[in-house]
Image: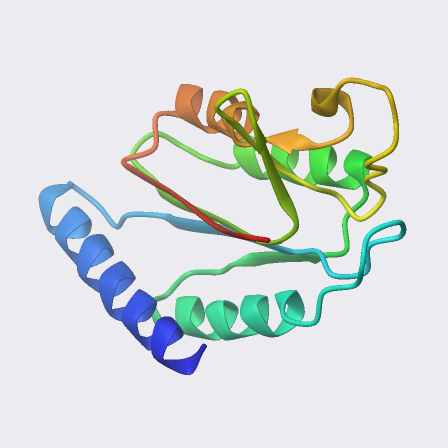
Length: 153
């Protein structure tokens, strides 16, 4: 993860430096880092907390003030992403990172909360967070740059 964090730092630094040169003022840098490892009905994951920690350190070097959240239930994930999206202003650099379980179906990608029950009969969209939903929260805020990084098993 150390090499990946270093490469990510270099990429983010270059991207945000170029963006700042093209704008009138300082580009605001937002990052939401979510790491889910303590799943109830699914096997525990060992790496999300370390992954988020390494990325958080790299982002701080790139002058981000990342918001970090661990082991989120479905309701908590909804709250965190909605609150984060409301803080975005036009032209901002936005990064959302997720480490945990993911699921793909019907060309949609989902991020699984720690309380996800794979045996439940309710629609997947009511039990997991779709990446498309994240996009519908972020896009209307008109960020200058938007990155979603998904480390989902």
